[in-house]
Image (cartoon, rainbow, N blue to C red; front, side):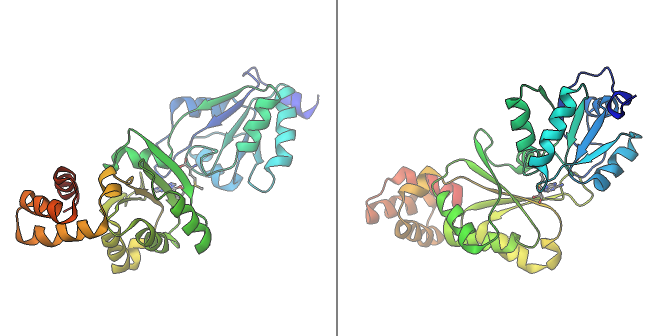
Length: 286
Ligand code: SAM
């Protein structure tokens, strides 16, 4: 009997893209567990890391390493195996495969080769963070990791300067402080940020501040930069785009001495701006 026919099962020969926990080991669906139990092979980004999850759920399967460096070569082998009758699951270290994780080439080539790809949904840090951040979620843009080098990071942020949708970034503890500094430089210190840290874990926490205050908070304590981070940036508001900075400065000064309505009316006269826009901006930002 050949090696592949020994492990050939009756489970449909397809590629199953399975989401796994992002911290809390209980965050995995029944369907994900069931599918992992039924497939013939599990392709994982890091077989040792995923081995712990599988051990916890008493799943013992042949594993296959599939990471950024070997994905293109290994995709062909996996496609042959599926065509030969095997069911294969793809998991990553955490969350949903392909979301800032390997798998794109494999899925792309499976589709091109007419191999069925079945998503088994579950956690992803981007959706988990957005669901509880308190920022607009009707429209958002997922930006993944920013480039590590300063020029690349600045160019990317500059390209997003007029983005009105909530922006979601993944960030590492080593870079979070620098990224917030660059955001202040490019979007301004008043732009609202939310950090979701250690989602679903013991020290899960959300911090919501204007960018300049977020930097102060990060600088306060080295522990504040520890853990896993999702950084969310409120979209550029329409008012912010239209009102020039000198008018906003006048409004800020007047607001210290006067009620907002009066301050907005005077600023409107001084800078030939719309009273209502200034008032609305003041309500949101002062
Ligand atoms: N595939 C994963 C997903 O679906 O979210 C993302 C993998 S990416 C390599 C890892 C990054 O996701 C981390 O650097 C962090 O930015 C974010 N992340 C993953 N788990 C997280 C958690 N528990 N809390 C906060 N951020 C997390």
